[in-house]
Amino acid sequence: MNKPVNILICEDDYLTLKALEHTLKHAGYSIMLAKDGKEARELLSRGNIQVLLTDIHVPYFSGLELIRYVREELNSPIPVLVLSRVGLEDTIMHAFELGANDYITKPFNPGDLLLRLKKMMSQEK
Image 1 (cartoon, rainbow, N blue to C red):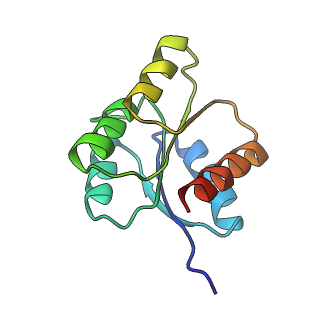
Image 2 (image 1 turned 45 degrees about the vertical axis):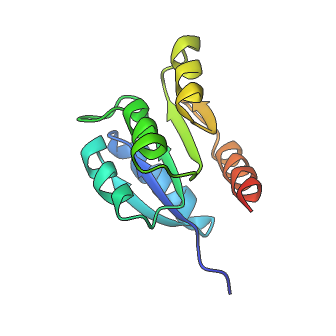
Image 3 (image 1 turned 30 degrees about the vertical axis):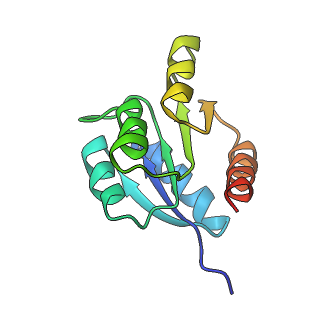
């Protein structure tokens, strides 16, 4: 039996965080939760995260700062998916320039999220 993929969700909105947790656990993923960028950095530094799913606007360290941390400080190739209400082209482009693998604007379709995660994971193999 395959070990579940460890996904770190960094989201400061409680309802969104719980909805993501429920959706991803139901799909068989192992979930770690961070309500802000500081918690996310601590969990990422442990090295057992396989996917980062982050909002842009989270306290302490933004989602963009987390992408930079993953790519530059940790030098990690883990997939990064941004899930945010910020749909501005400049912000989206900046996220991709920093190393995000995908970007979904809220509100989101859970099925779409699961398909994108599955695609990102298959590209990593």
